[in-house]
Length: 399
Image (cartoon, rainbow, N blue to C red; front, side):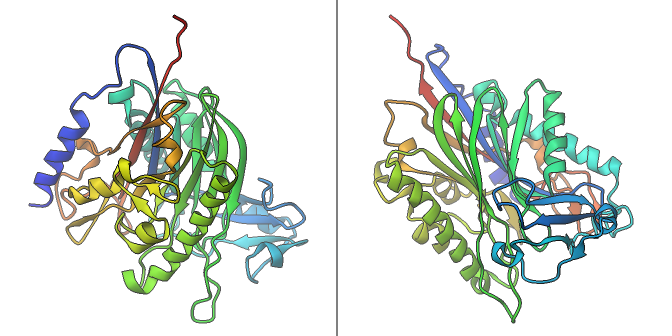
């Protein structure tokens, strides 16, 4: 028996109606984060990097079919991947660790499976937060997406649910070719600026280490300035303690980015979301980001992490060795907590784990219903549960 008591608790929390004030004097917005477990398209891809452009240009690094890239006449680049080393170069970067996601690969990844995966993710996204807000999420942060093509397909699928989404994304230098991205409801959010923040890891065994960039998105959520930072920190491969310095480095980069915004705009509303590959009580989160989980402890220099309270109650977003971790989190600046008189403020954070997202039988019973077990396609959703935060604000009325 795995996690039965835990999941009865979770399911009750998800389905007890807790709708936003019904008197129409509040507006709400759902901010979702979801590690979607290896959302690759079915095409064997390569990146074309144009070092003559700014790294902030969406065309700096684009993903195209590998055969088209090789036919372009550009040279394959095998050197260090950095903006400095690539400056002025126009080259191909082959994906060397993604061959499994191909119809001839070990996962026999084809259009039928891919389209089913897109449909599954669309269902989850469209239902997250709906019980409370009666609406789809305004903002969706994503991890483990291959490129802009899968984001386009996901936006198109979500469009059939009646909401028009667009996306923000940069291809990263990650060794597995996966990135983070952000979807936004075009009726609710206006993108002002996006930026990729590279996490420069130290070499390991003489080789350059690569990980996912942090995606910074600045925009207007219902006409109010907000900042979102989407993360997917280095994994625990090789052991938690051995790999911890990589996540400490990622935390330092994120903290610097958030502090730089607050130094200019002290009341800035910043929400950092992601798969941090650490729990809310891990030193990378607790010490480096200086997080607290009680609202009355939020002050200048701290960040609010509601996931810590949920984690201490036994909740989590992914399972390993019959226990839960809470790697997927949403961390907020004091502007969302202390500045309650104007604009959006924090209401609540939850794990979304309805019955259909939980494996009901077999080895992984009680775990998130994943898409793959090794190379075997299981037809599930993801090996993570999504997390979501609801923001609310008072609507000014003319008396």
